[in-house]
Length: 574
Image 1: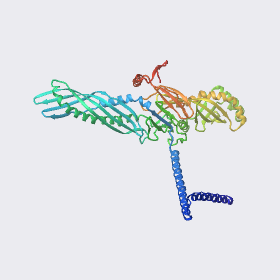
Image 2: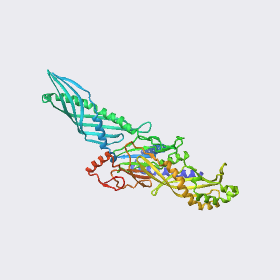
Image 3: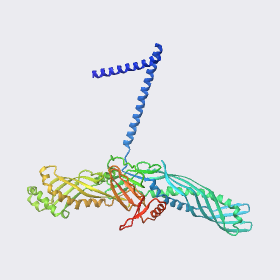
Image 4: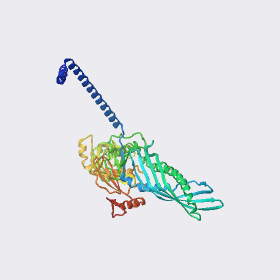
């Protein structure tokens, strides 16, 4: 301790000497008097001290900021499910959005208008929009949501007129056209209190540059001079009707569609799933990212859930239409919930017990049965399987696997008496998990791949169990695994609205990331961080999709090729 203090003192003294030498060299260069040298030395010392203090304070500020950011990142809950919609995916929605807006504008109703111009008295009623020629665009508005814009478009209207001039009365139809129609609409996307995607507000600005009217009837040409008056009023009223119609369409109709996306719903009688948004969607110029909780829970105890310690799934690609990233937590929470719900336990006895396996068990435990009671030789045997800890999933390029640790009890079932335990064994199994998409449902099919059974009590018993490995594995594949697959075959719905379904998929497994290759424009790609990816083809029977495909084909985006199969399908190639 003393030597350490001495060493530090020597270092400080050496540093002071070096500082003095540096200052003296600097001072001698100026060739000043002794008093000036002393002032210069004091000034340099003060400057050096100020710089050191400011440097230390800056370092402390950086450290505090880094610590706060680290704490924030630690406390933030990583998503179990992430969805990205890119501008290429938005491209496919432009035609449908335009058609939706045209439908809403076509339903605009305008009140009856009355007026007087000199000796002319007129009435306009039954206003109908007969044709819409909209040049529209749909794109992302960074940090806000979606932008729908209409520029230099036209609207054709038809309405009835009644005009009284002195004693002359005339009525007929008027065809009017609104030109230079411009609509600027921004949809603000947020996460509501239930964790659902919602349009919170709409910013709308609509104006019509000019409107022309063409009269018909006996005095049609005579009335042309009052056309300016009629079209001015009509343009004013129409301007006031466009934005309210779009506000209703977005805040009511579109939000009703978004409410069909499940947030917290039951999967089956055992578990449910939580798809609530963790934060507001992140909107950039090229994509819309949504982070969902993606957590399963036990219906009997919804508060008993698995803590999410998985990595945040990262999507780095933008060249496909839609991405779905699923972290390992998504599957681990499902396995945990099924474990807590008591699904992973079963008994194999009587007619479910294969005769060959029962004979093999009886031969293996012959000595123990004879020691307990020779009469047990005539009684049936059973196996009780119970998973001792929540299974865990592991994803590699070779596929997805689930590791299971199970306790196996070998029992004798004497009639009218409690079961007698012959042995307690430990089983370790690895299951292949085949993941697929059907409609809007994500399904998993398990298949036993590796199997090991041993006794934790006796090495000799473990050696005697070697002949049981093969028959027990076959028995589990026939009896236990189909039982589990039967419970999970219904799958779980992914958070997509009604009307968006998937027909056929190609599953690819990856480690941590997806190696992107050029994909078909008309496909939806699902990437799972630390998991897998799906490529889902568009339903060719959908009228909307056929319309979009034809439109893109005319623009030269891709060519089509047909696959031969029992069910028609369409594959699009860039």
